[in-house]
Image 1 (spheres, rainbow, N blue to C red):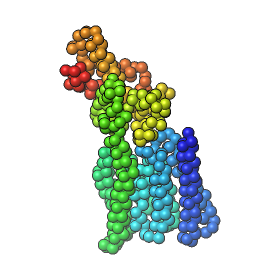
Image 2: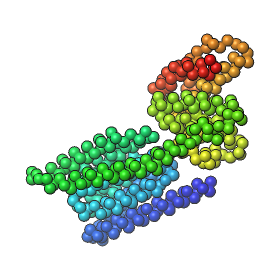
Image 3: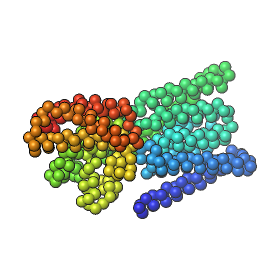
Image 4: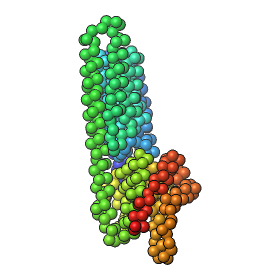
Length: 406
């Protein structure tokens, strides 16, 4: 609890400091560009309202867990991107408007918060830049709309990190818009010199975008991949020790992880999160009892990523409804594995013939039963996803034979 309070205090201090630095930068820049004290006062009031809206969007997104990736625990990323963008927008008006390499900041602000917060922050920054330069509305529309498109194109980067197609689309679109704007403003006087600044702008924007994407990959995607690579290893201590301590729990984890991983791949979920949930959905409960610690404490000690923790919370806390698709995959996989294991154990103890049992139909019956109970009503899963899961489980005859020991 104390750590959470300290984290909130740190975030509050960071926000206050950011607003003070931002307003100071806007005021000094306005004075530098020769604005009257009356205009500076009005500008500061508008800027304060704009920055307040940005902070509200950021904090609200954090509260409702809608920030991309783990940005809720790393406000500093967004703050640095915002301050650098503000500095650029205060300095760039001294250049022609064809030389503002600002759309890359729309990308950075979005990646380090979420799409809504990123676009709101970018709109505030580009408005300040246009105001200081005194340029026409065309420049604002060009940079705001292209920046917004950049934000939307890159809002769903995942562990596959497919940036090629959106990067190509973004740069082609930006180049086309810059060329059209340059031709429009040339008033029919065409020569090579008028394209020098736009070409430099496009090149710098491309380099900045690559830098932003590489930084994001380093601090978010690759960092999380390394964590999952460690804890999703079957030889990881917290998992491997159950092979001797509790074989039933261990093999439930192995089989559940198998089905959860296959489901995640089929339905384009986060494979690492689903696999991790399959391994630890019940083991984490056993560890809590053994160590007399909370789920969150054990996850923190083993450096579980935020999404992995959220899945385990949704699976094990009755007061927390199942929302994530990955949690649904793990929950249904566990139900199917537990049911089939029960039937196999019953066969061994009673010598009842079970060879003719269609385990695919058993799995489908289990899935439909859980859906009818309404347990998944609050989840993000769709009927199409459920249909895909049913096809997956009916097609796993070889694995059912493996479970049966054949």
